[in-house]
Image (cartoon, rainbow, N blue to C red; front, top):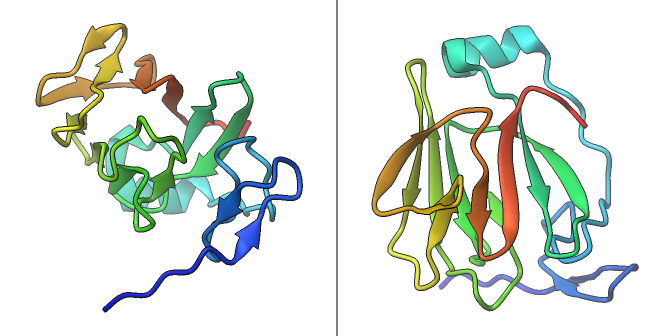
Length: 148
């Protein structure tokens, strides 16, 4: 059985965090500065669509930018999610974003509270781009090539 402990506490908002989390998604406090991956490496990893980062805006309007480190990004409350949104309205496995050479796809994972893309409820999957606004229970996500 997998055992995951809530070993950290955010010094800013006192939220309980998993020991491997590098940022608090409640107040967006960052525990460490992540190094930017070079553009050449990103192009080799993700092909022509080369989104290198994802911007996350919390319910209070604070933003954090995280590097994209995989072609399939899981968003949810689950401890194994790539982007953990610590809010009771977010499903454990809420959304999946897939990146490849041809297109980016957002897929709602049958979440209880739906995902919205550019104001429209996401039913199943939809193609997204750098202009797309992804709304997960009030958290706003955007793909970007910028570090900040």
